[in-house]
Image: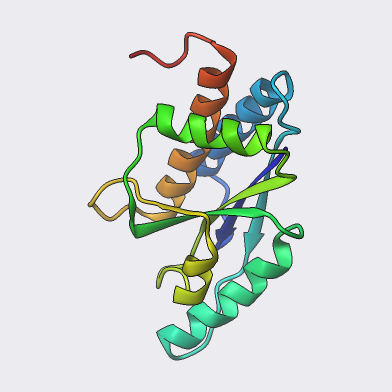
Length: 160
């Protein structure tokens, strides 16, 4: 199964991008041994539309264009469900075992994700009730995907 991390906004050079890339590379390497074909980062530019709803709609259209056909969507959204790392690993394992071709984790722009796009997601997750900058959300998503790979492979990275 292919894994994608699709983010609105382009990361700038610096420690945040470096850390996200480090976890993306770790997740890709760990996942290959257990039936995942890697983790790919895809970035969409932020919309310049004047109204938030227009920005979200434009960004959702760009995101849709970056997704493989019939990809399973996991939206990262402040209204989403909180899940444990083991729970996320279980979800990814189920999707892999069901022969889902691709699963995409999607992080919207500053205004969030369009409601229709959120409704199309198989799962909507949040990283708690606090607000996180997009660069940190990207790092946290990449780290959690890596952690899920280690849980599924029985690697000791994740502690109970």
